[in-house]
Amino acid sequence: MNVIVQGQLINIFKTADFTNKETGETKEGKVKLQLMCQTILNNNERKNELFDITIPNNKLVDFENKIGEQVDVKCSFFASGNITFFGI
Image 1: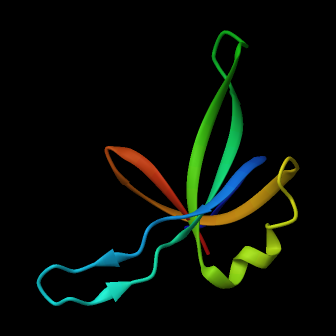
Image 2 (image 1 turned 90 degrees about the horizontal axis):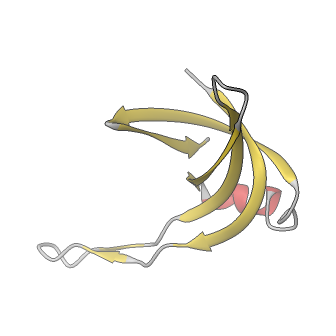
C-alpha cells in the first residue's frame, strides 16, 4: 500500500555512512526529508509533527529546491511500534 504524505519541507539531510564492523563493508548514508505535517485532533485543535522520510538518492532533485514549500511525498510504510514512512 502506498500513501501520500503532505507537509512543509523543513530540511533535507544525509545520514552518516555506515560501516559493517564484521565485514568492513561501507554503505552510503541515506537522504532524508524533514516534513512538518499538521493533523487535526478530535477537539479541532491542530498538532504539528515532524517526520523524517528516507527517499531514494535519485529523488533528491525533486525536492532540493522546495525547502519551505508544501510538498507531497509518495511513500510506503511499515510499523514496529511507530509508523515509519519511506519515499518511493
